Length: 256
Image (cartoon, rainbow, N blue to C red; front, side):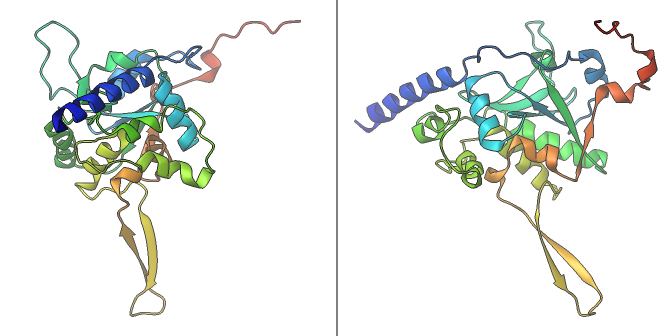
């Protein structure tokens, strides 16, 4: 009886997940993607923010008041080339209904994206972050947790702005229920790299000396836009890394 109950929940969850993963109508990227340049400048440990085109993406963009609805982490060449001859997976991400998976960079060739790069990481730090994500490949999203899915069915839920972030974090708390930004946040917290820590300033023994104590926020509270807002991640724009010269652009004559 119990197994039949959970099986029924999974089936309902799968249907909701499929509905949420359906593409939204009318999505168009604002600017054409320079995919070749993007491929050249990415480094292991970089975060790729994505403006998604699925129905769940619209809900996340509304709840977070941000362009970015999804986050993936670039892992370089640590994963093998598939035997099927497909592109090597160079991104690790968490998807609704799939869990933690590895995908090729070409998946987001036509999307609006942004690179957020952690600053000051040694090679061993990058390797630790990448290793954290690789070890969690296969982590599942438990589709029995219907509440986790239903909150995204309404793209613009009538809730105050101050509660919207909490709606992202609400859920079962099951460690196998992973969200894209929360798992990446855990990877960086594993090496004590800050994202958006809460900071408390307190007086030291000397009246003129002050020190800051960084408190780690719970990983479930992080959203994709936090990596963009973080003062500890550099925003890297591929076009500007190639000696950009605005005078070399050719413009059409303005209409008379």
